[in-house]
Image 1: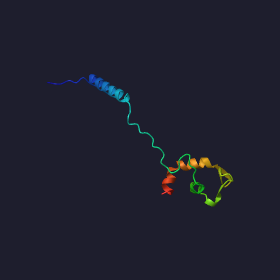
Image 2: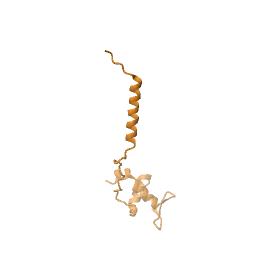
Image 3: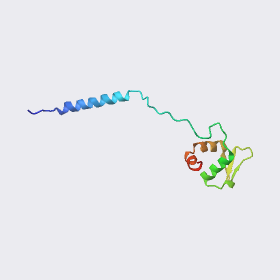
Image 4: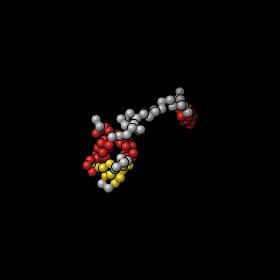
Length: 106
């Protein structure tokens, strides 16, 4: 006795099962959403970072000697080799510098 398998019916059945499985899995709510962790770094957004810390960060990041980095009179900007860098922007770069924190602040 020879069993004959109809390949068209088998293909249709497999395709229908695949489409049904994809539709059911795509419509389910994903409860496993990973929420981004809150910042755990030492300098929070509202906290002012020490000038010495920022000078060291700039010195290492820009490969400039620390004695060439000057703070202006009102303390709102750094002057490095004739270029002005806003202190608020430097503080934000410092907060986001994960590699710097991991390498130089052990």
